[in-house]
Length: 219
Image 1 (cartoon, rainbow, N blue to C red):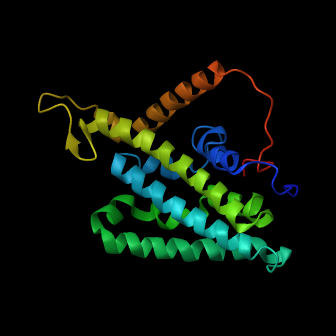
Image 2 (cartoon, one colour):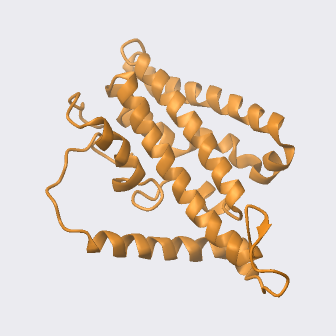
């Protein structure tokens, strides 16, 4: 189990950037791969799933942090799951009320946010050991990083697979779409490409002294 984290060891900016860049859930920790590969056939689907996950992540981590001195250690995981499931249910009904088309496009992956390891991992590794503001800021960075990862995949797959972005045609009637990009293999191809770009970029960065992390593990 993760060791307790000393409070105020990192700045708020570093706390936010940890999930956004240094420990990006998609490109660094490679968590939440099921929704990452399944719903990114379009930029709109990717953005919607990312925002829904971020909302659940921030709300769950905030409540877990507020209850961290009340919930007994023996039942903490069960309690976290109940909290996460409550917010997922609210988001599920919210999306259904706003757009049935989007709800049908995301399918069961909305409900499966409950078992997204990013959320439960943040609750256990960070929110249960830090005050609400710090926990929610870290969750916001993780959610933003996850959203950007999904949007990066969804944008490439939609452009190459349909010749459009957010449903708007970019290349006209003469464009020959790469249908494979909106099929399951396309998700792996685009993810592999982004991982190569990410690794190349990190390799070019000058080496600096390791900064203290807000979590001892990627969860």
